[in-house]
Length: 212
Image (cartoon, rainbow, N blue to C red; front, side):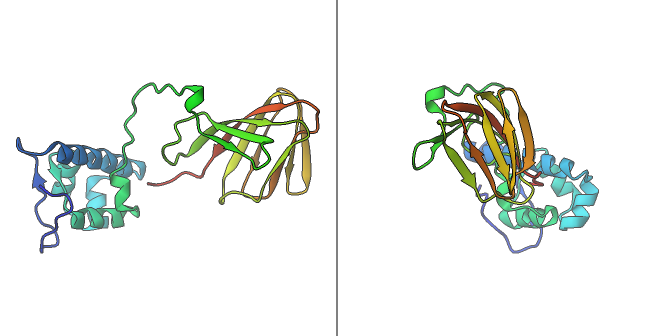
């Protein structure tokens, strides 16, 4: 059974799950089923409504969403077009493992050219996420600037040690230990440590909600 195989009709029967199915096919079918249900639910669409949007029958959508069938790429493209997402959105593995331990030595670190600014990801750095959590360290009198991120991105920062001066465009804000700030980071901004000792902060980056 080949997930990428297509047939001439517009809505060919999807491959039925059977005892001879290969493990990879089973995994693909489960991922497609879970993601289809997630994407449809996120848009508050019934099966009938999605069928009208994408031109795939309600019965076929129900079979795919229940994991009883694996769609051809042609059918999956039609569903993706109706939901306005890429085909890849159906193949993402978003299963929650419950708990994931991230040892400090395995964390992804970003270091500025002069070494004054260190950002450590406090989450698995394996895929795009809507919310990211970082530890930031800025050496004495050090600074780090950004020209801005994508539209709608926000940053929420709290200082855990020392002091930090945050500049957003031409406005400056001085934060002491325990102070926090929330701002739109899609504009030029800068972090500066005005003190003679290291500053540590925790930063949450929030991206606009994705529909895929």
